[in-house]
Image (cartoon, rainbow, N blue to C red; front, side, top):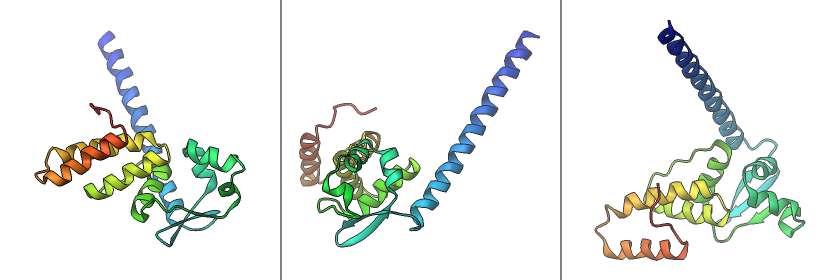
Amino acid sequence: MQALNCLKKELIFIFRQKEELSVLRQLSKEMRSMLEDDEDKNVTFIIENKPIKAHKSVLKARSEFFNAMFASGMRESQNLEIPLPDATYDAFKAFLEYLYTGTCSIPDVHLAEDIFICANQFAAFKLKDYCERELIKAVTNISNVDLLLQYLEMADVYQVRENVS
């Protein structure tokens, strides 16, 4: 009887986790829809002379950097258009995807590098850690010495930890 009760509790626990995962997936899907739809977006970033629109409320809720920026009274907090001359368009789009959905696809190592820099600039540390892991995987497969040296220099500049778990 005790084993049956333990099994019952375990099944209830698994069911609740599955339910929570389903809710999180639905939330991520809905947030992706918000990201893809320009309706109600109230801030525009200019990157590589192209606009990328976003919701200030999402940025503030998901990023301490943007929360501080928009609350500070800085010029950027008042502007509806914010130039980001140091970011790349694709990396910032991926960064926003991460802020909105909690996920981000990194199809190649060069984009991983750009997203890493963007995540570092805007203090998205979990995304930065994810990019670090992707870059470390890439470094283990690099036969081009120049590219390897470039990544080692980048690791030094951005103070990448020795062991990324």
